[in-house]
Image (cartoon, rainbow, N blue to C red; front, side):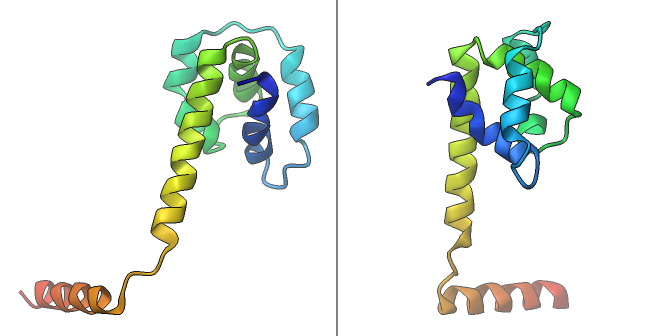
Length: 109
């Protein structure tokens, strides 16, 4: 997996994705003062866009030279996509009725 495969992180980091090329270019020239442990400790915050731009740049600058971290980021993103798809399906009508009835009984207790 190449550094360019991190585009999904850049695109997600900004809601409209328009800043992704500029952010990628900045990260390419940003000095890295972190390591794999730093990225792994912040992987969820990075993918959830909860870090400042400076913190994201710091971690992505490390990832540009670390295939293992790129793989971790890519894997987590794939897991998230699969989870979104799996919960997007509508439950069968019979199951929805059972859940609703069970919930109603629980509330009556």
